[in-house]
Amino acid sequence: MATAQSVTESETPTSDTQRFAGLTLFVLSAQFMTVIMLGAAMAPGYDFGGGAISDLGVVAETAVLFNTSLVVVGLLNAIGGYIFYRTHGSRWILSVYVLAAIGAIGAGAFPLDTGGLHGLFALAAFLFFNVEAIASGTRLAGPMKVVSILAGLVGITFVALMAIGDAGNAAAFGPIGHGGTERMIVYPPMLWLLAFGGYLMGAPIDDAAVSPEKTP
Image (tube, rainbow, N blue to C red; front, side):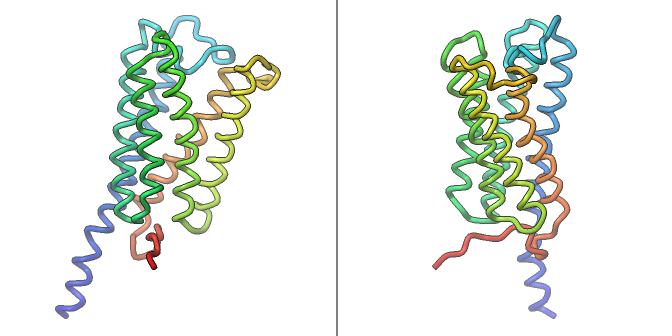
């Protein structure tokens, strides 16, 4: 009886840790997706097709809301990534979460009208949030593994298309324009975070929701 009790007590914090990581990542995405929707509705004359998402960070009616949300995205991603790290133990995955977090915080701290710094931070966020999905997928199994990898690949594909379009070949944007292309970078990892957060909250650790890193 004592042995069974000690095993249960040792598993409970790990299970709670996994669920807390899921909650943090779910809230991250839910609040940002909500802010994007509200900001687009609030900004006068906002152009979905031609405008950038970051335009919401320089419009007077939405600047504070959007830029604050971006900083929150970064902070929650760093926190959630560290908590998730405690369930899998892979430092390279944690580093991807941190790099994505730095990109989001920097993009919020340096809005679009501040110049090149915003572009660099935004690119880091675009790239590493999608890499984050793929990296996390390496520790998962079943449908969630597939969803994670596909979400990341879709986002990275559109990062490449946006780079080609911004370099002068606007045809790379296709009929969805710059704004649509940017959303196809942002939406896949954000929707993935909603699904992944729910997955972590709902799957007990003893059901092998996350595979820990194997050490020699």
